[in-house]
Image 1 (cartoon, rainbow, N blue to C red):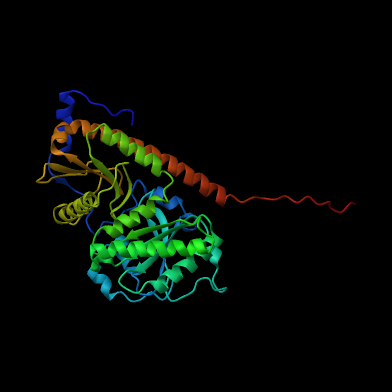
Image 2 (cartoon, one colour; image 1 turned 60 degrees about the vertical axis):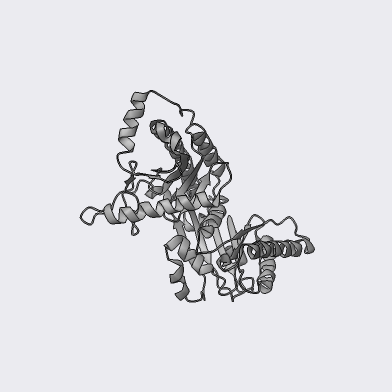
Length: 386
């Protein structure tokens, strides 16, 4: 990113004509499917399912675990989740949207105790990952807190490196005061139980969530970010990019799920995040209507971009980073006068991201090679003498 710089008006005009020919230029249609010609295809298949980090969705029955998974990763509308049946077996799904967003998500039935001897706790809770415990905030959550305490203690005993996330879910039906009081009460009770058990070193993260707004996407973004070892590098690249481009806020989005895998170091404003999510939805919807040519799916390539001007002198600017990732920026309209500078700095940013991709790919290939190479042991024996 040290190549970020300003340059002449002639270059500025060149980039302006190249990147701002229209306000919305293609993105993902709703039924977008990556084909075998996808340049990131080899990256996403390097990591086997057993090597991927795991996200374990747990909680009592009807707490909303399956609805969360369907809304975030399957584009199901919240109203459609009303017809989902209760989960009665472990449902596993591999998420491989990009070389950064790779993990395995497991949805556990709430009525089964997975710490019984008949279950392999080491296989369930071992390895890198996070345990997401979902609590229904509209229900009596005392039983859920008891189950949370038991689950955390047992899982921590099996895997001390497992991260614990608590979704205080279905808060859409609560007032703002009730939301704050519910979160405070659950936070206090859960941590007091850990202190009483002598396990105060266990850290729990709490999130207020609902599938009827963007809070569930933001919460899942925070969970996924903790599983990305390159997160500090990505945040540093975004900080350099926005400081050299006059941008107020930038998000690096996984377009398929609307999870942001990184943002700059400035605080995340929920309204700003919602605007960026809405922008992705608008681009997808417009591409679905106008972006197809005789039934051929539109390609989300290096020229894909979108500009939306709001009525408060704010601009939303989307640029494609890879076949899976998009950079969404928020900036003042005055700072967009030098769009060429922003586009030049973006190219530097995208090249730096590609270098991070390459390092990640090499690491995964080396890991895969080490785990797949058999170790031969040679036994020397004395044969019969004649």
